[in-house]
Image (cartoon, rainbow, N blue to C red; front, top):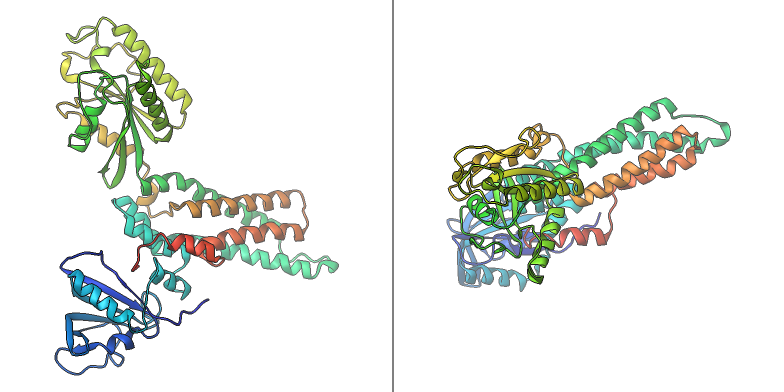
Length: 474
């Protein structure tokens, strides 16, 4: 792998003023260049001679001018994050001080790091594989318990370990198959076909399990999109405000107030949910409302969960708030519900009855055995805990809780899918008696796909695409 000969520097903490800032250097000359501008506070000290993983108090000086009193942390290769000599300088959090120190080193042969270059060097120096490197970015971006746990599991090598097992098993039989090709004229089989079929079955099941886990992993990482839909004036915006505990959407008695989608996020039991307030579903009164209703169906398409909201008054025949059009509203509700359920068969639909504070008794004219109802009053914030609990229960955290490997990266998902297709080709070839040289093509293709995940097979374009999304200094 490429070995870097230069030394890089970057601010490792967010830009701006704060209590402290951390400036990080990595490269063969990192310790030497810091040593040339460092003066120990208590006694003369050569940073190149001190032990690794030690911290030293002193000053960074430009000639006779003291820039700041600092703490310098030394990490000598190969026992560092990047596998190179690494120095971290903790300075006071003044923007001026940070820039003065950065400029001092940049003027003296150190180069400013590119986005993700510290982690790129860690990968190229064998400190982590590519899947673990990508998990570093996910860990930094994690904003909920589940996304944090997913990233941490992958960074610690849980996913990489699973891929390595698959790779090692497959490469063993691939080598036997290649050996057969070398002795093709002697008609020798080194790879027992039944054992090979058993292996292919295991590989197929494992790959399928990993591929299927992406549906859960991606949701846990990116958040669960939840569309709040229903007829106008049933309380969709009030419900959004109640869930978020803030006045996020405009609430009015005028039907059709919401004409565009409004989105916001809430973390429940460690899971991030993205709630989407939509325009009411009805026969549009004008062009603008028609566009809003079209967007409602687009958001239903994107959502994993649909909260179908209905007014309790529309379900009750005896409530004082009951409208003469009760039967028509009920028919429209059931028709629209069935339409959504039929059109979006994979959607999880929660039927939520709002404004229960307005009815005395629950004489609902709806089949409560057919439809499971969640009763709330968004205005008075009653019943919201039941709704939240139901939302959480819809998200399968079981695999994560049991420390199973869950795929959350779209690049990994694509590579696993390609590996699975290659294995299915191998399985078909075995069943039809395909020759070893043709089987080897698909085996190598599967190995190639697995190698792309961990970085055994990479291109400069792939690395640039991954690491340019990192923050500078990581």
